[in-house]
Structures are given as C-alpha cells and as structure tokens.
Image (cartoon, rainbow, N blue to C red):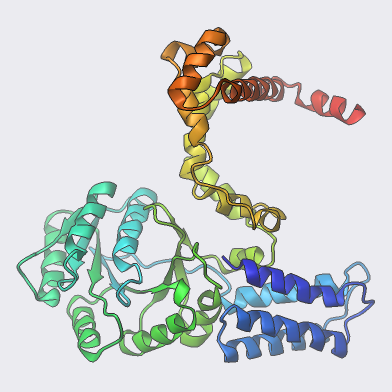
Length: 441
C-alpha cells in the first residue's frame, strides 16, 4: 500500500537536500515532482493540483528556522496537508439508537458482505454491541449463505427471509426482529450491481426511507482507483451517505482513492479493510496514514494492536515464570499466537519507522511461524514443559514428526534458550547492567 507513492515523494524531497533555504525555484521543482507522484498514484487531477498549490503557498510563507533544513520543513508541510486532504482526524461511527441501524451500500464485488461481518465483529468485541446482520441482497445467489457463514464464524445472528424478494420489507421486518430479541445494532447488507443503474439506486433509496438508518456507509474497492471516487460521487448524490469504507487497501493499490475521495465527496473515510480475516478492519486515521505514506511508520497503531492482544493477568503470570527460569515452549507458542492475531506480519513491520522501506521487496509470508509451530507441536507435553530433556534422540523424532531436519530443531532450541536467558536478565533487574556490559565490548 502506497509503496510507490512513498518512494516517489522521498525522491522529490531530495531536490531540497543541501539547499540553504526555500526559494520559489526549488519549491516549484519539488512540487512538480510531488504532483507527478500523486497523479501516478491515481489521485484525482484537480485534487493533486489544489494540493500542490496549497503546499506551495504554505512553503513560501515559511521562515525556515536555523535548526530546520528546507527538506525537513517541506516534509512537514506535505505531511500536514496529506492528513488534511484525507480528513484531518478520525471520524467515529454513529451507533446510537434502539436499535442503531447501519445501511451498507456499494457496487457488486466491493466487499460489502464481508465488511458487514467485519464491522459486526468489531462492534461486538470492542463496543459490547449485540448486532444483527440482515441479508438484504436478494439477487446474488450466494449472498445470503455467505452472510450466514460469516455470522456463524463471529457468533452473530443473521436475519434472512429466503423466499421474500422485497428487500425493503426484509429490512423493516429485521428491525422489528431486533427489538423483539434484544439486539441493539442492525447492519443491513444490500445488493450491489456491476455498474450503477437506476433500479439499484431507487431500491436502496427506498430502504433508506423505510428504515431511516443512523449511518449509511459506502463500501468501495480501493484497487479501482479513480473509478472508486466517481462511483462514490454518484452514490453520495442519491444517498447522502455518512462515510466511506475502503476495502482491499492491503492489495496492489496505488492509493489514489484514499487520497482523493474526501476532497471529491466531502465525506470522511471511516474504516479500511486490510485483509481477508474477519479482524482485518481498522478505523481510518488520516494523520497516521500520512505518517505511513511519508515512511514515518505508525507506532501508535502498532501499540494499539499489541494492546488489543495484551492480557495483564497473563503478563504477570509470564513474568513470574521468566523470573524463575520456567518459561517453556507452551508459553513460547502462546506468544506466537498473540503476534499472529495482530495481523499481517509485513504490515506490522512497516509500522515501525524506517522499516517499511527496508522490507518493501521482501516477501514476508504470513506462515513465517509455520515451521516453528510444527516443531513445537511435534514435542510431547513433557518436552514442551521441560525443554531441558530434549536430547539427541528426542530431537531426531521431533524433526521427523515436523517435516524438518535436526539442524532446524537444534537452531530453534538454541534460539529459545538464548531468548529465555535474555528475558530472565531483563526481568530480574540486570537489564541495565547487561546493556552497560554490551557497550564496553
């Protein structure tokens, strides 16, 4: 996501490198490259032009401090304007009401049904809501079944009337059903089309009028670039939706839709889909996205993801085990599972400042832990709890059972031992002394 744009912007800032001050000539040259970078990323032409004009005005009005280089000042101005272009701050979803009603809209293939499941899962786990998913797509044969499967996976009820072909009536009945069964949130999945057509727009307008939703979300595939922006414009004119959802932002997308859509329809991007898993959904934070575009990482989001998996009681238990040198392979594999729950490994690594550029060409497989897990799962319960008993014959058996070789097993056990020692040093108060010793070497 945004990798090409990040590289192009970085190259454009280098024009100012070594310059003593910002001038109209070097600013114009830099912003010419910035505009090209944005257009190559499929940003709307008018948006790109207005963006660079705003940056130019702000840059020329800046008295560059002695301690700040022109290149650094330009990066800051571009960062602030990128964040403003995408909305400035995150905008929350409106889920007030008894029940609150969210209406999903968008073209076929944009990911409405999957996102409906993701949103229900998120609001259930993080906001304590009791959602009801409504199968309002009566045309696509697999739509109802898909929603039922998603509902089962996340433990959320699905309302469907398979014989009823009137989506307006289904939506009304679903809200009544929600009231009767104590559901405080209704998410209505609607039909999409391969292209905008009058029948589709009239139908979703009728649903809106009948259920008066607190929130209308327009779901769009980020990989469609400027087509996504044009579609959003059409839908907004008819529905006056509250916010945009960008799906497939983890794919091979140039990011133009994310940068253009707010300025074209004047509606905030509220969520982004970042993968296939049902927890691959993020609130959209414009400032953090600007950080990532400019290669500054996104430590805040990384910490938030870690905190979601953090269990205070479990942390205290682990600390006691580490202090007593009792940290074992059961604990080790549990920590791996926690990391995997945080999301795509490459995306996580790219949130660390400076790392994104270093790993852009690396293929970091989500199954990177697969070999380690296979080795640990090939151990007996006694071996996992007592790594000290792993002699040669046991290691040979583990290698055979895990489809690896003895060298790989030995390597993992050695890494585990070193990790355990370091963890013990850091938790026993010897961490500072250890760091001092390392510096002396």
